[in-house]
Image (tube, rainbow, N blue to C red; front, side, top):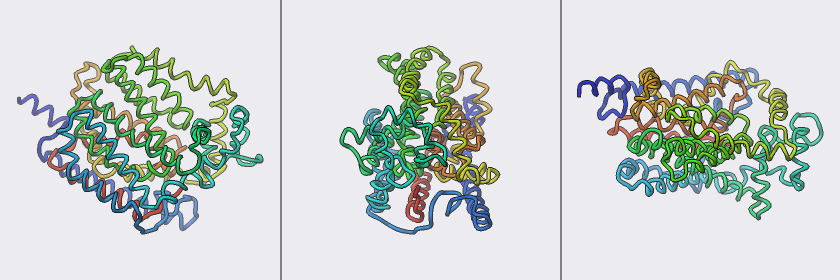
Length: 464
């Protein structure tokens, strides 16, 4: 018993009482300080030389206090998850819990989006001048559009793509082209697609945490995955859809690696297919390879790699045969990035202000959980050689891998601003860190999470 208590004190896993609560609060307060500093310094920079290209730094948003049709629903979802989420997460059967988390996440994302109204919050989001639906008509001949895609990335040549189309491989735009082809055209269907698919990311994360750590850990994380502040942006952009694709790739690889699924080979193949797809949805999501590698390290196996690699080749081969050169397009994108706001936004500000955006997106509970991740990381890393990591340590290691991927994206300089939206696929995996918080305080932390999301969505207009 003494040995167990000493280990728990060292790694701070699943504290049963108030151990470390003041330090958790200090971590959350540090997040507030970071956001405040980013807001004050960013506002001064923007007033002085207008190089940030955001109206309400560090977020790409405008001050716009308002309520809307989704206000009552969002409040109801928040109250329900805060009041009943922790209890139901402990008591429901596993499959019922997965359905409950999906329903809660979907309701949360949808109600937050509807605070801005149906047209401004959902139907009109993907039809603005920089978005994917603006170019649907240029894909009447998909083959010709893919072969000539690179020619329209740079600013200057006639017919250059809008910002979001140029900034992503054509898989992103092609998703909405195919929706249009099957009769689901227009902004409303595009918005619903992103919300319905994007909400499933919480389920994928729950499955992955259960597979890599244990069910108890996953159950503790469930309410925090359902009531995440990042849901503000999951319902207003295609990045929520990208997040779900990446999340299911990780979850399926975890199932394949642990052989906790009827057909591990099929799971590995599908994980590879989704990873290949996500690389053609967003260039930056090649960094999902970091948490995917972490899955193999934690499960101490390379068995799924051949089948995973086979699946991962499918989408690149299809696009290459169609005439799209990913590598060439990426280099053109880098040039396009510096032609626009990316070339003017100061790296010295955004390299740390991006983290302030992340602090808002993950919320205070995840920040407190990340404090525990940092405290437990040294001991968890030492277990890698022996393979003796307990469940909290496995969670710590996986969250650390996701955080590493996010930091690489930050240091690259290709993510200056808008990271509250762009980094959703990495932010998702920071949220389970809240499972490390003491059980008696879960409702308080959930209330803080909801308060952040509701404040952002009611006080700001988060347009793109």
